[in-house]
Image (cartoon, rainbow, N blue to C red; front, side, top):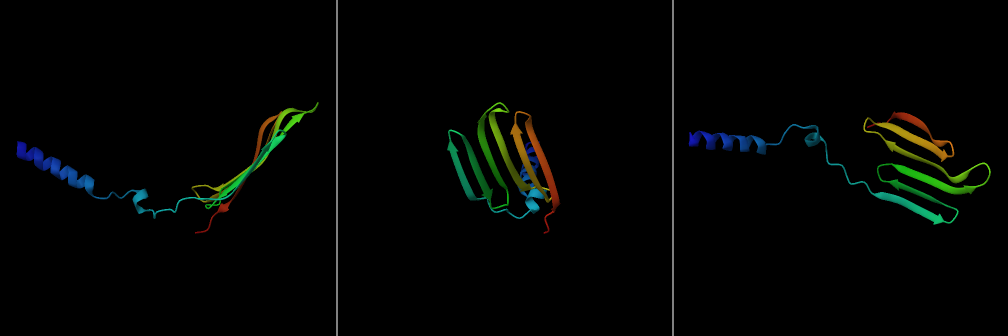
Length: 113
């Protein structure tokens, strides 16, 4: 009985050691994503920032402090874009003000391989 148990455990260890046919094992290694552009500025009246990465993802945003009869608080405008896992190019432009977050999405064609 002990020999059978040792044989079964050895066989199990060998099966687990072989590479599996998973989608991750079949995909080539992706290079790390790097920041290729980055800028920001902050002062008492507001802020702005932007960045872009080597995979084409980018974001920019401006925030302005408002204190008038129309709006009190922060008025934010910005946009971001990226390529979704299905290859679609996604771009969102937004405003966030006294009326809340108001996005506008634009979806493009899948990226050609």
